[in-house]
Amino acid sequence: MEITKHASAHWQGGLKDGKGTLSTESGALSDTPYGFRTRFEGKPGTNPEELIGAAHAGCFSMALSMQLGLAGLTAESLATKAEVTLEQDEGGFTITAVHLSLLARIPGAKRADFESAVEAAKTGCPVSKLLNAEITLDASLES
Image (cartoon, rainbow, N blue to C red):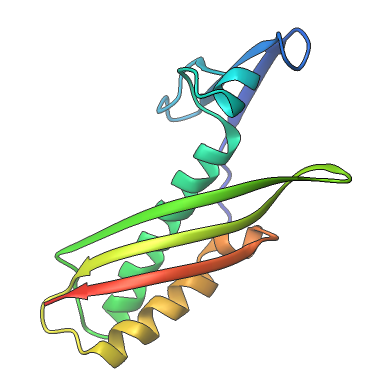
């Protein structure tokens, strides 16, 4: 099975004074502003690292849901946060790491089953496979 999703970016101007918009096929983003100021100065809008973090947190949560299902478990809730690290190096900027934090509520889950499902989801989620970065994870199971 192959699935193709579409997104677009439009940009005007130079790096620091320019501005752009991002849109997605689904309409979740529709001419959403982005630029140097939204990326490095905390101005309103989005940036690529924020979007990668959201994509990774969402992908991991879905992959974990699948892994839990294979173990006969269903999550009551999975709250995943992603922290994306962007560092400047000789070649420019590089995303060097993503740290995922998970707070899970899974009725009847045993710690060993939970940890196994978490590790399989971390390495198996398509966004994890895409990223050339160190991926770390803290996972907490609420009882």
